[in-house]
Image 1 (cartoon, rainbow, N blue to C red):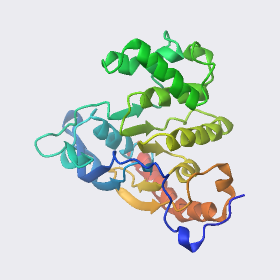
Image 2 (cartoon, rainbow, N blue to C red):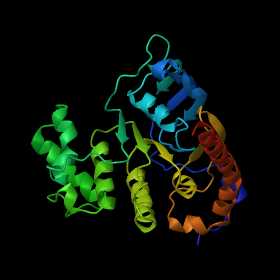
Image 3 (spheres, helix red, strand yellow):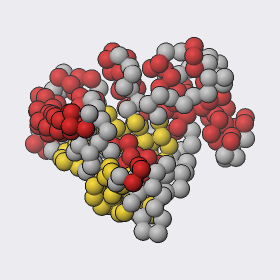
Image 4 (spheres, rainbow, N blue to C red):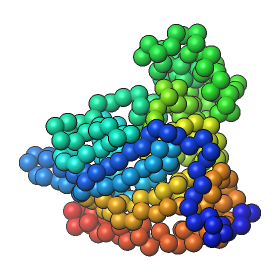
Amino acid sequence: MMDAPSASLQRPRRPTHAASQGAIRIEDVVKIYDPEGAAVMAVDHCSLDIAAGEICMIVGPSGCGKTTLLNAIAGFHSITSGSIYLDGEMLCGPGRPQAAPGADRIVVFQNGALFPWKTNLENVAFGPIMQGKMKPREAYEKARDVMADAGLSGTEHSFPGEISSGVRRRVEIVRALMNQPKVLLFDEPYRALDSLTKSVMHEALLEIYYKNKVTIFFITHDLEEAIFLGHKLAIMTTRPCRPKKILEIDIPHPRDYSALTSPRFRELMEETADAVHEEARKAFELGEKEG
């Protein structure tokens, strides 16, 4: 069991190999959709700084605008105003409302995106080959290595449909890392998993994270998941989306599941539960009015 952190551990300790690239700055971002002429504000003057190599967890009610923000970082959606920067370079902002998609920002989708007709090894090697970054032989050699590091040895020649949902999630993360991104963008990747599988996947994700210099922007509805994984937690308001509360999670890394029984973990859960519940209640009431 992990003891409560001492007063000297009031800030979370980053892994010693923390990334030098991947810092995200979201500056006063607004996003307004205009379906059939009805202006709908999805994001309202949102600002958030994420350090290079940081795991930033995003929590908020369904439909509040979290995924809109992720899509703007990825380059899938435009913004109405404000700016988003990666390592000081503007991705989108004045004169450039939509970021260009790039291999430096990879999305791990909720429903998965593996090619079912390719083996797991072929899926992992696919990106660098298609982008012309590696010859097939080099890509397959590296794919085997990264799969072994992620505990996926023995699954190389299986197809996605032949492995469990938890192992597929791990293959998807490894495939994303093959492109050597600065940022991984997760949109509720473990939502469909049962609690036992999810707990294993959390530890697996951290094991992979500790070996890679990558920033993680992770959307979830699971407060326990957010506190266990993250260095930082941003609780978003109901639509329009903006930070209601930003919390530094001062439980030291590396972590394992003993952290969930620590007094500090319980304190953080209590500290954030009221804010999350308040926004969920607002979203529910808004849904009733709109319904």
